[in-house]
Length: 201
Image (tube, rainbow, N blue to C red; front, side, top):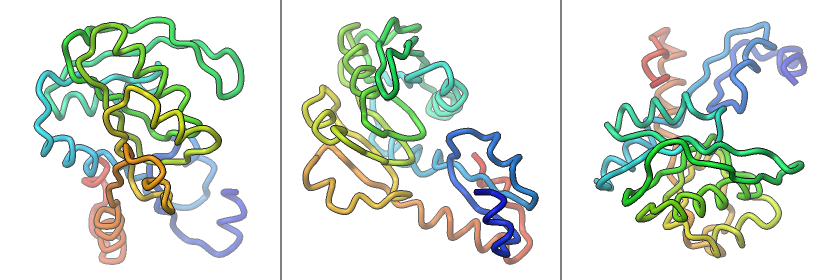
């Protein structure tokens, strides 16, 4: 795909929350990799949630969760999971303290919602007061909406990197935030040869 985009005549790529940061290395042109972190942070900060613990749903998301927790001055927990098969997970353990706290599960995307729903239940089983989740890309395939709606999750915060197209009407727990101002500012800075790195939060 990187070669196709380059061959098509693109001279610069602006993207957000790549599932694997290494994807940038496949492009032979400049890549600006933005993060939805500032948008999500602003929303959570305004919520003024007490006793917040940011939870990474797996070991791969620890860096993202740690950065989020640091900016919110919140504690950090990690879910140790093992996959049973494609799109199937088994929650094994939670590293960190979630008892009596508001847990915020943080991920880059939600696909079938299996990981997030099981992670939320694991937090509740270990004494969390409530569980929220936030992600950049709301893929939401298959049984995702039903799983979320029937889960213990209080709210699922997503961005409009993928349009919900009415899914929020089927699943009222979904709350969508706009990344348009962030992308717009990045595009402006690129065209005016200003620094984009300060948006990488």
